[in-house]
Length: 131
Image (cartoon, helix red, strand yellow):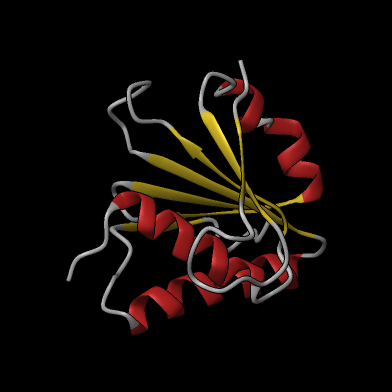
């Protein structure tokens, strides 16, 4: 059975957390843009961790039958983008995330924060309304 974009965003966040990603959030962009439904944004503290997080997401979804439409940033490992069409994943190092501040650019979006490794489901996620 195919996942919804929201389910794909949650799964992506779960996979990021398996590599100790920091500040993992999803942003619901439905109704704000036609580019995609969700951004998932997370960070790593080194280029090695950024790549490990991106690999965990890419390999985990690939194992579940989902391949990214587009991937970029592996060379620099400061900002790796994984585009699954309806969900776009941004894996940043701390400095690059602070510089681009995607959360601020899309401040009208509904945010969801993910913490620690969590089972499938919503029991450990926190949804925040930001206006």
